[in-house]
Amino acid sequence: MYQDGDTVFAVASGTGRAAVTLLRISGPNAGAILDNLCPRPKPRMATLRKLRIADGSILDHALVLWLPGPGNYTGEDVAELHLHGGRAVLSAVADVLVGLGARPAEAGEFTRRAFLNGRLDLIEAEAVADLIEAETTAQRVQALRQMDGDLGNVLHDWASRLGKLLAHQEALIDFPDEDLPPEVEAELMSEMTCLHGEIAAMLNDGRRGEKLREGLVFAVVGPPNAGKSTLVNALAAREVAIVSETPGTTRDVLEVRLDLGGVPVTLLDTAGLREAGDAIEAEGIRRARARMAEADLVVQVADDGIFEALQAAETLCVRTKADLRGGAGLAVSAATGAGMNDLRDALARVAQRLTQAEGPPPLTRARHRSALTDAVERLDAALGAHLPELRGEDLRMALRAIGRVTGAVGVEDILDQVFRQFCIGK
Image 1: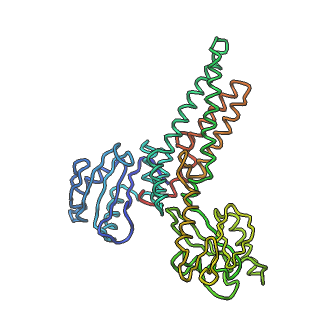
Image 2: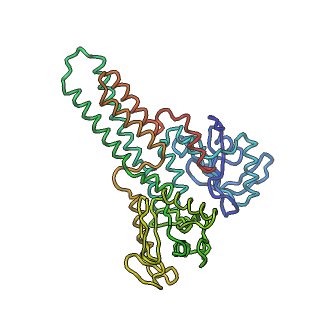
Image 3: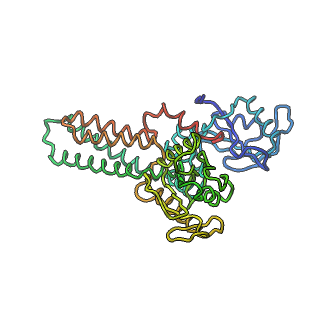
């Protein structure tokens, strides 16, 4: 469990054998611990040092940095040891650090300390985790934008404006008998309406930020033997699904992760849609239809050009086995490769459109959306309030809702949930 005041350490580079392993120490005793290992270098100057234990024997030859707080990542005193990457070296150094009073860090503890020490707001901290987990270019760009404050700056501006509105509303409550200009209340209502519209516009974004962070789902559906599995294998450039001339070979939903236009997409190979021949096939078809209903795009394939009307958010019709039958429209042959580049381009365009970074900065997590939905509802109530005291309370609750996103207020109950998603060492 995280304990304020502890000095912690963790590997900040990859695990396993490597040429160099970076071990980071953070906390109030980081300097004293470093002094027990070697002469302390000048601040922010990488220096080669021999790390020794109490009896004078050498642990390792390491590049050492001393980064006194608060001007570093965590805001605390930090020491970095660039060790040789063998497991024996790391194990020996870790044992010595524990003996000197440090403890291994928990997942996300360095970033959690950065948040608690005011080095990052909660949105920026989450962006650090997103950047570490980024699989594609678009995910990396979105995480960097969030780290740079694209979303946080907008929310801080909204919080500032709500704070001013609340102050003006409190003035109207405290001085009801004063001859305040009538335009004061009119301006108050106008600004509330404006804020309401801006927040609602951010919420009405098709969940593009969350979809990019989590990845899209494209389901490949169609009748048996239409070439679904062959097409999935060709798009994945490996054998994901068994291909057979026997109808109904695919019984369960198979998944493969792809990068389409910089967007992560889970491609689903599903059971052929037809009247089931047995209970197992019926279950496979049921699962296919269930996943199809949840998919961001349904790729409907047919080798005869006859496509079924489907209940789906969006459908892309693809004619397969073009080398045997030809045909108009988007026609492909997985066997010869004909039309496959066109299909990949079409899928990438859909993926990019569903996650395009236009308009307001995207919301990337469900908790952002939930809090801003609360803010909009509170502003709705404030605009319809007949008593100034009720309006003031609604404005106060809207301000708190925005503060929950940035971590300014009421986040103690979600910190563990946020930071347990991080890797050790960050």
